[in-house]
Length: 93
Picture 1 (spheres, rainbow, N blue to C red):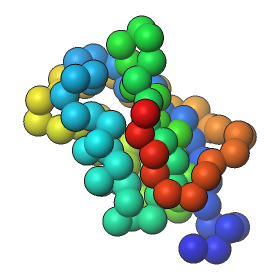
Picture 2 (spheres, rainbow, N blue to C red; picture 1 turned 30 degrees about the horizontal axis):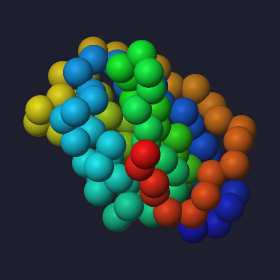
Picture 3 (cartoon, helix red, strand yellow; picture 1 turned 30 degrees about the vertical axis):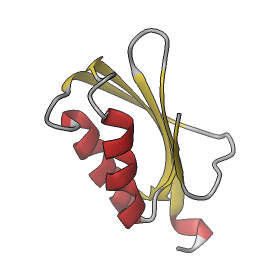
Picture 4 (cartoon, one colour; picture 1 turned 180 degrees about the horizontal axis):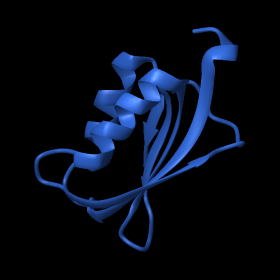
């Protein structure tokens, strides 16, 4: 993927998103799309997803995050640009 085609975004996902395999299912969704980034639980009960990929693939990821895995109950997803460093691959933690 050419660097010029990639963008990086931060997604904050709110609702029942911890303890429902949200991070792992996000990784499994993102990897085949060539999205690099991470998904981590935050202390407020939300999940933070940092993702770098093409605009089209990040749009697909955002649609996925709006629903999440079947056990999740997503109430809101906030999206902002992200200027930090993103490692290759997709990590959960």
